[in-house]
Amino acid sequence: MKKKFRARASTTDPCFKPFLLFIGVIVSASFSLATVPKLAQANPELDRQYSLETVGVLRSWDNVDGLFADYVTTAYKDFFARQSRFKLQDLTKADVILAKSKIPYNKLIDDTEVLSQVARSMHSESIIRTKIYKEGPRYRFVVDWLHAPQIQMLATDTFTLEESTDSGITEFRGALEKSLLRMIGQLPFQANVTGRDQDSVTVNIGASSQLKKGDTLITATLEEVRRHPLLHTIVEWRLVRTGRVIVDEVDESIAFCKVKEEEYGRQIARFQKVVQIIPTSDASVPASPDTDELARQRAFAEPPRLGWISPGLWIGGLSRQSSSLNGTKGKTGGGFLFGVKGEGQLWFDRQWFGELSLKYGSAGYSHKDIVTNVESGDGSASVTQFKIDTGYTYHLTPDFFGPKAWAKVGYESTSYNFTLSPSEGTSPTSFTGLFLSIGGDLPLRGEYGALLNLDFGILGSGNESGRFNGASSGASSVDFFVGGYYRMNRRFDIKVGLDFMGQNIDFNNGATMTHKVIAIGPSALFYF
Image 1 (cartoon, rainbow, N blue to C red):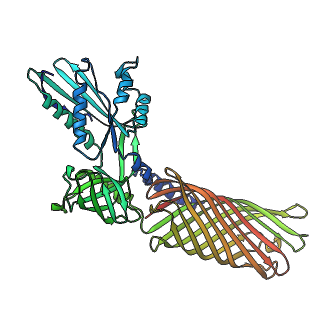
Image 2: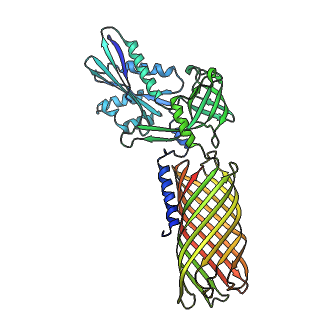
Image 3: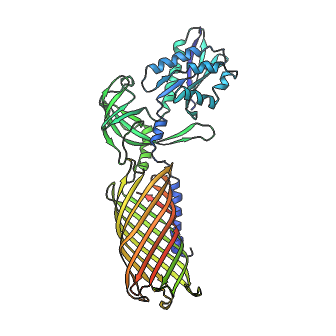
């Protein structure tokens, strides 16, 4: 090249009023929380997927017969040789194959399937593509950084060089390296955690990046990477802080650190990101604008610490059956149930908690004789249930919102009331006693998960106020919920599932009475 270039950079970068009021509160809260930026559950796979440890450089294309190809390749090799964050992958073999294709080279390097195959065969996590256009006395450089295998745009940069008569290779190389730095600067993190052993952590930058002993590194995990569905560009990164480490020893290309602090419910782990470096000479430096945004996200995205409340609806069917010892007489009936429910949990620490549950529903009710099948009365019914318990949660992973199981023990009281006369066998009935419970939460994919909770009554007793069947001799109870949830963000879930409740009472005269509620239980869950 016998011409001098002057660089000029430019980046492109129900029927009842209380029920209606209750529904209104839920809907209003749902719409309010829906406006909060959505953060997906922490995903270690995202951290690994965007480790960006390897990068390959395609042979550049230009419209002046390959004038710049060798110079661009050399400039990139020199740049990556002087840093430790990225390992340069040799794409020479791929360049040779692409050059022999009958399809023009500039079209090949725009083909996402071709680039994906190149990245896969060359074991490169990302690819840099360079195009140079001669436009009169200027050369316009377009540099794209692409993430494999979907070939998404990580960053792009454009700059121009103006030619003059003297040699300008140095300025050309400088402009190209500045372009690379600008693209790397578009990432919201500066390094990766490459290993973790007890309290020791390694990161993939060192003295070559001006890191010194005593420096503080802020670490974070990727929670979501938002991509444009048509342009295949990354439009937003979501990170949540996991802790901070102190640099203990520095080599040229690696730093050995000690864990100083970890966020509640999170652990620093391999592939997580270094989002801020605070020099040891000024550990009180305030967060940069980028980490101010991270702090804003962190305030909302931190795992909740106190507990949750969950208002919801209780919609389904109520049934009741009573029969004598030999089954020669009895009544069976039921009706459509509409009601509300509310649950809440207060956490004593990460594992132990207390819980309260209330349910109320009303139903139209009709029944018939179990022998003659003749209908004998219509009226209304209501059911009320109260539960209080304490329990222990076992977290299967360090992530607070990861899979978990729990066990509970508590007290329950359930009452059924009917407007029909006692002569119809519909006296108010109540069940009380202790219960044991087991359950679990299993995240499935993305923001979706499955829930299961099963309660068994123990030491239960029953009472029929009208004494239609005499004194009771024993009672049993079982409740279960099976369903799923969608996590809108770290403060709000939407749950729905099958809610079953059943109680049975035996009497001294040999009669039995069974109550069941089978309902759909949609609800909202608010963490705090």
